[in-house]
Image (cartoon, rainbow, N blue to C red; front, side, top):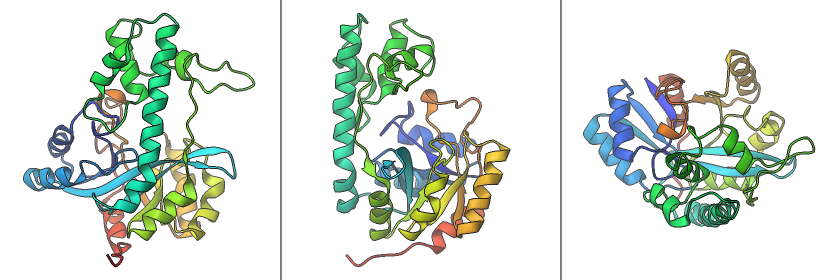
Length: 285
């Protein structure tokens, strides 16, 4: 069984690197990609634990990006990246800092609105992460009794972006994301393979043709956000533009729908692993 999209507590999963990998082992997963948000921290540890557990770890990252041409968010997966690549670190670290500061601002707004929660309390939930995420804020609020789930009415009340039809969340704080093309190019420059994550989530299909010209090598066909119809649509884009078809559970432990979509639930097959390996390149150091 294969899973090419998985997070750990290094970003926004409730489970540690070791817990995730041994959970994968128990689920019969042979190949697991660790793709934490905007960081490669923990990949060296993951590879070592993978050897001990008998699970092949594929070093990855999921970059939080933006399609400024079409005014849409986009997530770019990078596979076979180095855990200590300075170019990738310098690209993503400003984003990590922006997210952390935005989370601080959100907690201050939430506390000012009358919720009994502090920055110190929220930070405790993110002690293993490179940054505080909205999930950590919601976890603190859950334990305070304000809600019984991470994603629900309270999440929208606090964090909704707001549109002409819907009201902006009381704690909404915008973040400037990386340009998606810069993310794709950087992954290629360091010898990795750039793949568009869950294109239906942010409706990124229109950008696929352009991004292949900048080095996009794959597209995520199998994902919890993709039903059979969207899988078929995404497969067609993959065939049209000669892209590798990947997939994974986008596992977040207690911060995601792990009961409905456990590790390995969106298995792209061994052919996806082999296709990624064929596209590996090793730039001069």
